[in-house]
Image (cartoon, rainbow, N blue to C red; front, side):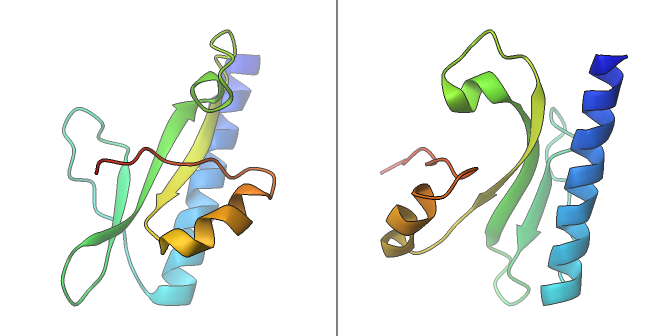
Length: 100
């Protein structure tokens, strides 16, 4: 039951994030990945480049505790690098991987 409840919470949180992006920016997600069909991509309407990826991730992947198998709704956002340090001081924000 706890596993089912956790998955329902993740979907509900993901739906709230999608609804907020739609309300603020008017952007609808698309789902371009066959392997990860529930991963939602948000794109800039002018150039179609993505600015956000909404996905379910095991918390252990974020915290380093591989035993934690609980899922969390994660929104990976592209943003200016100078904004990152302030966000990382807040709870619930994690650094993404750099592909430079």
